[in-house]
Image 1: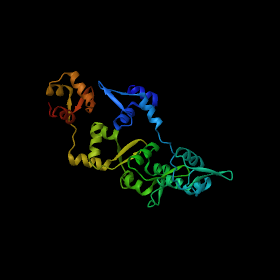
Image 2: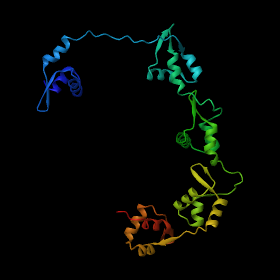
Image 3: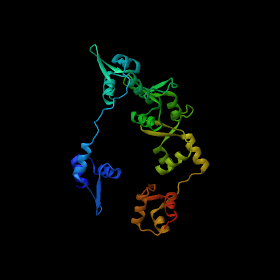
Image 4: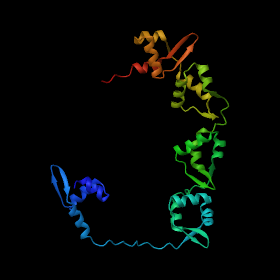
Length: 288
């Protein structure tokens, strides 16, 4: 019999048959890179087999249990949470005087991994974070997940560490001394900067900012000072100037603008292209 026939007959995999041959459990012969096993050698395994004995499990009996009420009070979870968790984690349980009780050791072990940091004394709800820092619900969840803010669950509500949240979000709170703010549209209209250029400036410089709804606002005083100190004057090519400098057709130039997201503005009837961003594209070294 071939290996596949033996595997099918015994309900094992072909790899197991090969392993039994290699370890000497099956007597076999190899002919032309194929392995053959006699059926009578397989039968002989069962003729001389030792009686199968079930090894008793040396497990200590469970003597301590929780009632459902004790679990919900101690760990501040709902009954449905306990019920679903006991099924998912296969928590040992027994019926006593008409009530289901659960293994204390297994319950404690499960909730020990979920207990909050004992050093955290104050907690925020999601609503409190939203109100204090003017964030949306999805923004709160994204923030707490990204920065790994310690959390706990109690009575179906999730709470987040106040100290950790404040530490990361304190820069979002506006300085009460700042009275005037720019929106992105204000800056673009006033300085004729491309939005991408403005975002890059704000990212690289410590401009105080706040959020109102889903819009960002930037300190007017700090941004104006940055423009004065760095003498930021936007530089642009006209389409004709860019075509002439880099020897491009109009279609090729527009392709580079779209593909590389080069900032551009419209000045009357004319389109102007950001000079630094376009120069950066064509001044990159060519690697072969």
